[in-house]
Image (tube, rainbow, N blue to C red):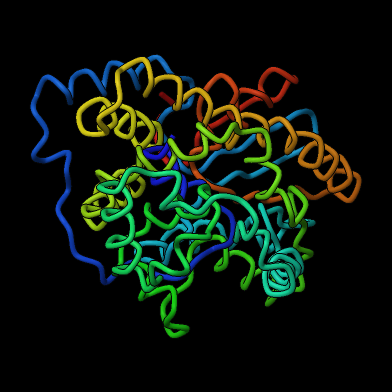
Length: 341
């Protein structure tokens, strides 16, 4: 699951962390063997709604404009914000994963209850990992500004998420002058327009996602994340370029095939982690979001309006993605930023 957490930390995460635009790396697709690129393309081709960031769902007089977001700042968000301006101006509400109130509650909870991220009572990470693994982890976390004495007691899911963010991104996140991700740009514009901002899920969702993992599954998240931790800038560039090209599901399959090649896990283990990550971090949340989206659209329609929804781009595609789930409930899905796949 570690490779997936690295991807999800950038693409399908929670709060709209600040910018990675100044980070420098190489696009790993450019150096990829042709055979692997062909395998990724074949895996992507069979997935519903695998390409595209901007969509419209309609059912009768109900309208939802959906945009797949990227949670880090980038100047390339500008055209999408311009594209969405008319929809925001005419909407009854904006729906996001977590609005300002939810982010504030999460921040307050983490400040008041450090045990949410720190495992003070259980075995430490050096006790749960081999010595070579711990040395690699301690060095990677030190590069991200976290000393080993702190890392030792952090919960594995949180460590794995941090490993998916490059040191450059971590520095940018600490700089309040950095540009906002698309989620926060949408929220800021909604506030300017006095447009209500509504959350798709409770503020504490992140903590429930990992509650059912076994101790072995928890520590495997870190083990699978370590090989890529030193190349996180390259990951960021690769996945960001794919996002702005609209190749949403290619991001997911890149994580799978990179896991096959460099995680040290067997193909079956990588597939097992992928399935677990998709179920825990994406599919379940997607299903939970359908009710507030459809209820919000129905309420807006009674006022002759639609709604806008912005959330991590990886939540859009797939059989259990938001678009297919809406389609199964009788909604007509139309791509707005290019031809439908």
